[in-house]
Amino acid sequence: MKPTLSIILLLLAVGLPSASAQDEKSASGTTAGLAKIDITPRVPVRMIGYASRDYEGEPAENKLFARALAIGDEAGQLGALMITADLLGIPKSLSDRVFERIERKLGISRKKFAISATHTHGGPALSDYMQEMHFCKILPAGEKQHIDEYTAWLVDRLEQIAIQAAGSRQPANLRWGEGRAGFAMNRRVIENGTWKAMRPNPHGSVDQSVPVLTVTAADDDSKVLGVFLSYACHCTSYAPPNKGFHGDWAGAAARIIEKRHPGSHALIAAGCGADANPEPRTADAAPFIEKHGNELADQVDALLADSTRTFRLTAPPKCQTRTVQLPLAFQPDREELEGWVAGQDKRRAFYGQIWLDRIDLGEAVPTGFDYLIQTWRFPGENDRSLTSVFLPGEVVSGYSLRIKAELNNDSRRLWVIGYANESPCYITTAKEIAEGGYEVIQSMVSYDKPSSLAPETEDIIVGTVVELAGGKAEQGEE
Image (cartoon, rainbow, N blue to C red):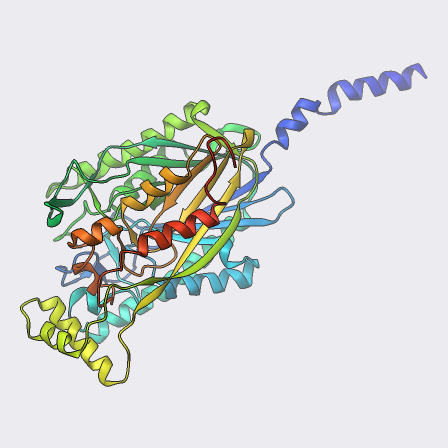
């Protein structure tokens, strides 16, 4: 008996993991996989983001990328899949085509899939996304063909990284925290309650938070597998007459983070910054693009170095979606549209004629449009939680500020991401709608919207987010 007992004791001492080691190994409760792919057009494709660009963009040294993050549980179930891409926006047809592909391959439901654009103004045009409305002219057939061919190729690439990320999942620790960067500045100048100009307004609404989700290896928390962050600011540093594709500050931030953490992938999304521009901006944008990218990378490193500023997410999220109807303020009649055509505003004249032709074909001017709201609710350690909110379109800062003000508390944190899943138009607040201006009125033509949003839009969106996030909670309660 003694030799047998000795062997047993030896095995217990050196051959089996301790209880604390077992607890540490299973502590994460999550798996994660990441992937990255080059989406730079291989041939000239019309650029989008500035209507003054009357040319096709060209492949350049600066590349565009898409990145994917797949989150699952220890049992192998895929809980959520996120894609970010260096694009101006995500047309619904693109989002639908990508989802249909990955649904067949991965069996994922729509509520568990999200895709967001960095909103770079150095990216290519896409099928079913502004085009004629943006440029106020019918594009040549050859240019339209290039756009359609690129879009089809892009769908293939996005499907590829989704499958790659899902297939590369491994045990991982997910932590969330929030930093701050100062280069976003409001761009709406308001005088006596009315919009006057688009230029830097240091007193205007802005959300300068930097929400960051870090992904590290379960057995080595110092090994960074990936980062997912957002910042609420336009990617408008890279402006005409530049012809080469460029990821702007978001592309720079991803590249710098990945260089600092070799082998990692950095997903960058645009927050609710449709009324903010990066400042400073100059004709020579390159130094400032790098400066802004480094500022975001510094925030990531600060959060990685100080775990007291973050908390661990303990399981994949509970995912929900809801489609609401957003109302337009009014529907122009034939007489008003004829006035647009005869007026001095070339953009409105072009659009007015389009609608007159549609009415002649029996089409009715819309009263509103569908709007998809999505939430992912992550449970976290010490009874804390994170709710990620995905809002389509160019969402202004007032939405993230209001949602966080109403729902954030000691136990629950909110992360609001814009430019997600679809690109219907600018999504402005009731206050901005009353003020008017570019985001409220002029921009709507590019998005094929005949009027501004109705002021009740804000309450519809925020009310839906509150319901999907689990309702308002008292401080410290969930």
